[in-house]
Length: 168
Image (cartoon, rainbow, N blue to C red):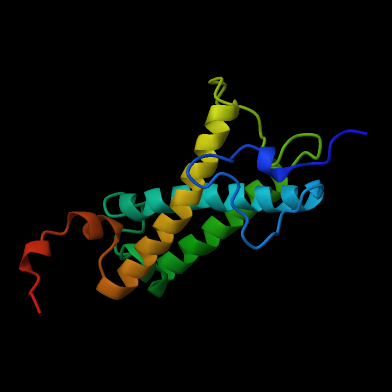
């Protein structure tokens, strides 16, 4: 018989953590469950990478009609901001359910090489998984810091008031 499916031998098992599943969600031999979790990890990672980029870029870039919308999470306090959020969710839902549908004959998240740049190989798959993992923490940090400080993603990085902090 073929060897049992081993999640520790899949793409994304890289230094420094190697195969990291402390709660045992992906058991050896359970390929179906692994595919579900890997697909979710890739989708969340891709969304987080775009969200982190958007959290910085929205400081300068505005769609027409969104000039008065505040940056960051405060955007949903305005009618155009709510409309933009709804449009974003509808667009993402369409892409996920109609365009980028998982193929059970391919590994999770494999939509080929849509740009035709020859970048779909193991090293790029490792990079995408690791960058997505980092981006999930990054966007969480950007949002929490914004809620605490009131500064959008760009101002959190480039604010010049660090030297004005009082020593307690």
